[in-house]
Amino acid sequence: NRPMEAVKYLNNCSARQIGQVRYFTYYADAYMMLGKYEWALAKLDAVPAGKLKKKKSLKAVMRRKASCCRNLNRYADELECYDVLLKNNYHPEKYYYQRGRVKVRILEVSPYIASANDALHHAYGTEESFIKSIFEDLDRALQYGNEFGAEILSYKGACYFYQKKYKAALEAFYQSQQQKNLANNLVYLGLYHYQEKAFGQAKQYFTECLDAEADND
Image 1 (cartoon, rainbow, N blue to C red):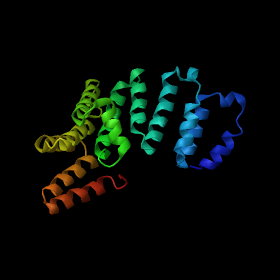
Image 2 (tube, rainbow, N blue to C red):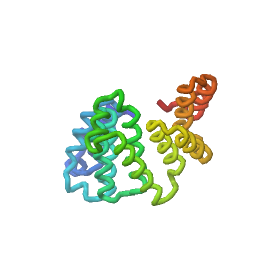
Image 3 (cartoon, one colour):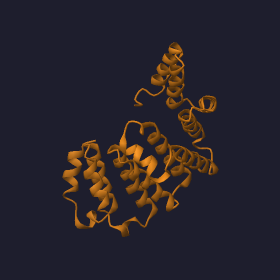
Image 4 (cartoon, one colour):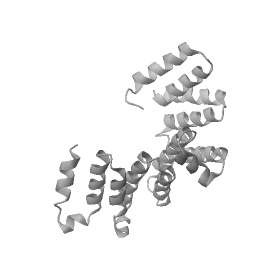
């Protein structure tokens, strides 16, 4: 947790060490901790292509790239990082779920952030097609196992919510909540009751949400 010290040591690495993937990922980690996401991306882009033949190295680089792109509101590029991971068949059960989760976040912020709206329409054309692709990713994740079952139900509920299919959304949130106490469920239940002007219930859900995950933005 001392990124400037990390950079100092990295600058003194030998030529052999500089040629390793972890040299670039450690450098990127330090820059990300400093909030220098463009610098971190530049380091990750400098990894020689030949070094990414191992799936473990590819994962280390692409996950960091995705994080940088998210923090820079480069949503199309963030999705592309997950496309690369899935193309290389690296833990598809995990990355189909994560790509679906990223798409839900893009859906949430698309009315407010132009780059998110662009990412939504660029490859999928319409919001309806984009939401359909979310369900496809989440269902593919479930085909590999139920490790993320509660989370997937929750994100499906969010999609129904944005489609104004509130009955289906509420059912998904309640089913998810029975499996796992998730802030995502509670905040959407709060939003639903807020829209219905049931402010007392909305406040209760929002309070429970903060109690469940106090550090969740």
